[in-house]
Image (cartoon, rainbow, N blue to C red; front, side):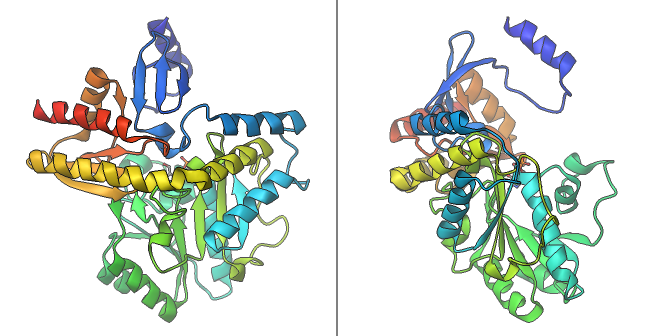
Length: 392
Ligand SMILES: Cc1ncc(COP(=O)(O)O)c(C=O)c1O
């Protein structure tokens, strides 16, 4: 059954994904169950999507309720769930306008367009982004990323985009100019190996912004909606971006993305200038609202409590295996181990020997992005397994 299904996949679907050798039957809480009855502890959460775990009763109830009212109408209609979610996001972020998309990369495309259109009034169209960043797979997003593996032979990319070194204030000073419309960055690079932006970098962004008047775009597609212990990662700093992009956890497991912007950008787009058929789908918005309600109902506290617990356990592990674990990175429940060897090896051992799901980011980093409802018990299971794998 399993082998047959895998064979069919190989014949029917573009072979662009490296998949785990697991054919899934169902998932519940922090666990995934395969068709052979095996149970896997999930420290990947659908790549930082399933923040409330699987089959959360309140998310299911919200989806069911919405499905019975209507699923899709198009953006020709006023839809209460969409408006309620937009208001909630504005309240939580301090930003004041939302555009809903279907995915992260679409939110990035929209943010590039919004920044370019804003910049056109000041003769600015350059977009600057940073090494190690990941923003998606569409051409605009790829234009602001540096890894050849995602871009090779798929250009030409959009003009006047530049990638400079992450977290280097001197480089930033050198490259920002009157022609810069926007800079795009992640507060913690997910695919880039759980690298956090530094206080000095944010400080120099603030100073340069005063001098050159460009937009700051925070890509919070992975860090947003509670993942780092604050509602949004930018809230760890004393600085609100002009634009923020969201997706992943936003839709509670359904496809949803968003661009948020400050009031000063509210009129940059006029009617029909940007749009999408399915973006802001009512069912996805209902699931997103239920996710945010759950986050406010104690889960954000759990991120901080379990995040600290996980960090302390990982630091103990690093002390014991300092030759193999070079650094413990990240915040909240977005953490990683920077290893002295290829992280894929550890991912495979955790999976094969301990039935624990993780993934590798940027070669040598083991990424840990579990559901935000995870408990100390599950962290202990992971740490014990890591201990065994590292001792081998
Ligand atoms: C920070 C960041 N930006 C953008 C994206 C692209 O999102 P999507 O895969 O939904 O297009 C991702 C996906 O991993 C991401 O982590």
